[in-house]
Image 1: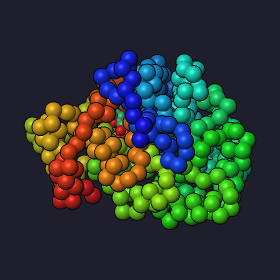
Image 2: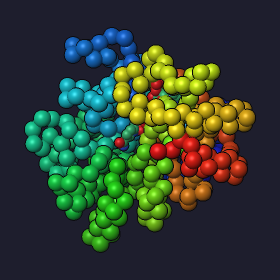
Image 3: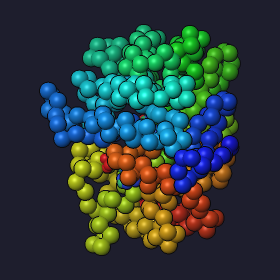
Image 4: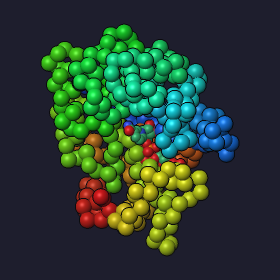
Length: 357
Ligand SMILES: NC(=O)c1ccc[n+]([C@@H]2O[C@H](COP(=O)([O-])OP(=O)(O)OC[C@H]3O[C@@H](n4cnc5c(N)ncnc54)[C@H](OP(=O)(O)O)[C@@H]3O)[C@@H](O)[C@H]2O)c1
């Protein structure tokens, strides 16, 4: 792991890690764009608009603080739980506006393909036809001539893996894409992709993008060891369990779940899947632990992920999301928080017995 202090930036050090087996250096955090700051204004479909100015300010602040990686997807809108076909592509457009404010060569731009972008049969998936179409669309929306990391958003059981790898290798040869990655694939699929790439001399994925946080530890069962074996970086999504691990959804005085105004749970029902008795108990315990260390719960949760790199022997890059500047600052503050062996053991104990599903 490379690490250096950039004194002019802030009170924290930004660390840079290698993107899997490649030589590319990525900041310890990547910035996500699935959910962006929202305006009260609605568009012609009655959907809340993204606050583009606020979003770009957050992106610029993250960049100024040393974050050189931004993650998006062709399907993301930024202000909708799950974007419909009238709203896909919007987050990439906002990222494109941000890229105009910085030197494109200083940024690792990561996007994804595979989700539905049009109603017709080949409007989604990983066929050569769809992927060749979507890379052009993503580049247009992002206003750039190449993507640094092009990720398969989720598996497409209808397209043979060899077709997917050949198509992605061609994109790399054309200079449209630098590296390729997988997301949401079962461990056996990841192994198949890696073996196929090596056996056929095709471009091999450099990373996997997976759900991982103190509550959702499923990838420890199999994908972590696969990533270690093939030298894949793990880009972690929902590192704060969609905000639940900030503690904002818990009324600590009354010991019950609550939904603060403006939060993601007010418009995205999938956050509520976390609202279980076990998770409530876990968050109350973790909050006590954070207080005793003099850090926020958010910082404890992110420091846990960063610390797990050494314990698991893999590179972990949390993709942090923020809809307000203070959130970004809180999250960045975790970079200098170090957990002790006792802290890790205690969290293991809590997630075995308390909150983890
Ligand atoms: N590959 C995939 O399938 C996939 C799936 C999901 C996400 N992703 C990627 O991963 C990124 C991160 O995922 P995520 O947004 O779910 O991450 P997360 O860190 O678990 O949740 C981020 C949200 O939590 C709230 N938050 C963050 N910091 C906070 C703080 N300090 N205090 C209070 N609230 C805070 C904000 O929501 P509110 O303010 O709105 O409440 C923020 O948007 C996405 O942007 C996307 O790029 C990929």
